[in-house]
Length: 305
Image (cartoon, rainbow, N blue to C red; front, side, top):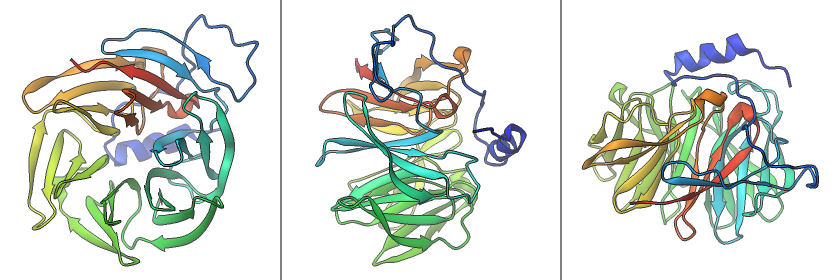
């Protein structure tokens, strides 16, 4: 796929996303000649707080987000496969095993530029530029599309235990809500400052913004910074003991905590490798990072001190 790089970077500047170099593959000495194209490449490279475990083959196509379906013990990877704001029907969802093997490269097709994902019961919810797409997991088919009025760059998803879906709209500085089969603009405010990564829990919505992790009260929509001076937040996951892991898309990951300075735990920018929207399995202490232009997902063992 040949990218229109100036066009893409203009989108990044418009949305105030950080950094961005076209990525190359990880430099490592692991021999892969005996692996099939769908098998993972093992690795034990140690980072500060992270130990690289494996990487998928680079047959993914601009992977932006990854989600772990606990019930089915499977990873879903959203592949943009083109420009992140183009309506081109090139996007798709892959199914990847916890071993790193790509089980089904094009499991769900017919998307444009899919990004954030979430599961409720037997449905996979996916953002797709201006739409919320609903997928039947058993059949791997799209069953609903909900156009989100006023949205131009939908990004992450967080779903409550009762099935309410919250969606971040980066370009519109809006949090949207999908409830009772209707999408509404739930909260619009310039102070949301390019909302991206989302976590919903215990009556609050945590939102990664340009330079802070925000906490929004779900009952009255009031919000305030929970952790300041984070830098830009793309991926966002809670890892325990009050710590979160964030990524900034350019290729850097940090531990952040409300009581401590942020700590850099990964930097792949010298290798021109991005770090997009992440997933974390707390029971296994496993972190998964899509590498965007590098066309892989890399898994890390996480040590939280």
